[in-house]
Image (cartoon, rainbow, N blue to C red; front, top):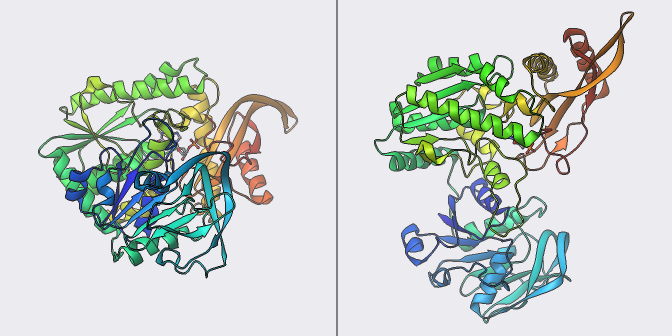
Length: 513
Ligand code: XMP
């Protein structure tokens, strides 16, 4: 297995993802945990040092444990990883005013197993750079294997010790042959076989859950979405009836969702489930609140209160399970001093008050959405459930800008149902990452029959994405949009105008709030 040492880059997990895609099992551990004892115990066949928002020139900036370079294991440093490796092994790193961010071309200047299949000496290769500092002198034993005007030490190698460094990010899709470079490192240089699969992940995750939980009881909140369902089924497979699930219907669910969850868990899996219909409580807590963060916090807080009540009813537990995914972790957590900021308070992360006094079980924390789906299939969840579009914890509450009411939630549910039905009919559901309607707090004038109407505007959103972190709007054809608009206006009272959102992420986010 491989070890990824994390220095806090926003894209560290993408390294893990690329490795998993090439069949290599790996774990990401923070730099300050990856010391000699840890590494001896873990026994990596390959070590990758991640990027970082820090600069090696800052006081107290993170360093790799010196043992990482003494373990006799191949090491690849990426961006900051290359810089700290150079700084620690006797090279020189410089803070340059000339920050390099975005696409760049590197030129291959020497043969190396790391660049096998990328090109011949003299060829150029497209890569993604994102750095302020750069290496100005490599440590003894290293030579340059690729260079660029902005990064003279774009790729370096010490073939004898099997130490490699790249200034660019091979883990992002903007480095088209980055995955090949990583594979050259793990398979070619480190000699790993690449025979790891999602079935193996499942077994390892089950073993880890058993080890963490022991004889303890675990409680899991189901949101109706794929993530919490997969987490619950996985945990149930690990510890059986030491798991109890709680499903809180917030009144902000999609059409038919509550019934579906209850049926799936009680009948299909026979997993103990406490289901509570709490729509009225959520709506009255949201009464008059129109600020998006306030809404998220209100829903999140009440959810925890209700959850706590239900957990007590269910007999209490030692652990709380959550279907937190990697993008949730990274968009909600700020690395100390780093550039990563809180964009939205995701209601499934970090909202758990210490008063519940439960430890967290988060078996999906390292995974991206499509990997969770693959795991769900591995666990035998029905395809219709696994393939479902993501749904945010705060539900329809953040798809109704302005104050939320039951009436608005009902209108939105009805319109959303028609929209999704039409998308399915068109065979587009699975190519779209997420599609939903948003009920705007704007009324406009229309005419139906001979009557003047003065009703709400509904916005339709549909995006494609790989992991939810970036997204493009979906290019529906106009006939389709026209058909959906007509059906919604004819069938849903309270909506007399439909618009389509053509914003990508960034600069937009997927949800409107
Ligand atoms: P944004 O709107 O931030 O959404 O571009 C990215 C993805 O995350 C979902 N999302 C959430 N999921 N709890 C969740 O479990 C939340 O609080 C939350 N907010 C947004 C969103 O639907 C999209 O798939």
